[in-house]
Image (cartoon, rainbow, N blue to C red; front, top):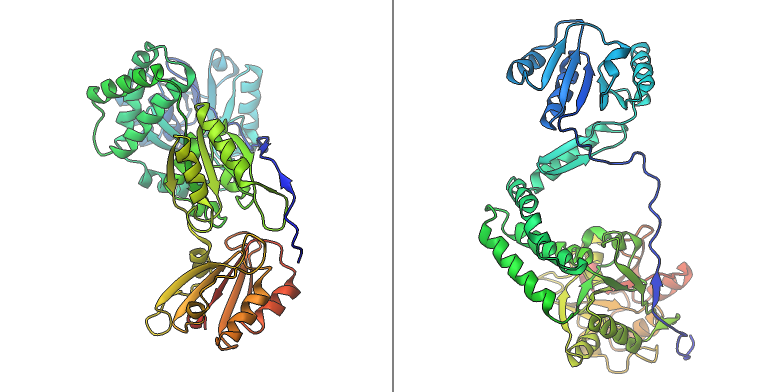
Length: 475
């Protein structure tokens, strides 16, 4: 172990990754008043006819056979937008069509239909035959004008339907009313002639209100309040803010909903080395992302540089998210950042995250507190400013047989820590578990006692973030 301080590095802006390959391009096609042709009269064709008519298309159905009951019902109910031609489709029927859909049992029929459509320059979909189709219909969550479409590119339609059911359960029906209100209110908002950031914040405030008041309908008084707030903010001097957000131990699914909302409204995100790419992918794509990582014994940004960067950005009117691994208030040096921001008269908010000790207990499916064996849980850091074991640890508390101890940042000092615990009276057979990269892909666990854990950890040549748990509750 070296006593030399790690090399210094400066905050480094991270370029946005290019979007990965897409199986298909998701688009929303306006069909109001446009002609769409459908070949076939079975149940699958009937569902597509219903969908097209709901989108405002003028649907012409070609079927030499008697259409199914559902399609006949649609013809009776919507004679102005759905027409039936009791014959096979011909090449001439494709003229001036916006799109063409076919229900056919065999590949030969699908090939003929596709050839006629391509000759006329009409995009085609053959139901359940993706190889003959230019586009696919996805599973739909309908809160029109709010629509969510889900596609698996034909790979797993049942999976798409299951995802649709999950979203349906999460999305209140009243959201359709809020979406309609947004559409009708937009011209009034545009009349305010707000700049880009003010408009964006108006709609963020609208969205926040919709989520918090999803059980009721939007009112004109809501619009008046939102517009007044927008006018006031547009004339006020730009004033930024900072949110300290706990990213948790790594798994993006452990982020709180409030943390995700903060990421999606941020102008700039300052993140630690321990924040995984999957977490950053939940952020607003337009946000600037800056790596301000601090790692023990490795090149690190200084705390002074991080605070100065936050203050500079906030004074420029930016909404800054300081994304910290774990929970910001547990060994995250949040106190220093909060003090610096308060001194600069900058608004700061804290959003807690799942701390590594909790994630480790969940991964192990082991409670860290038990009535009979662990009445107390204590968090310590085994890494002092000089990189060695802290001199002022409460050893009497640490060797308490009725406590469980979670040791943060203790990999390099694990051997002297365990040796001191034994010297202070803790039984050498006391259970100890070290977890590297908890909740990450490649998580590694080392199970032992305070007597043998340091040797086992050294043999494993660990390099990732580690949390160590010590106590009888782990037995």
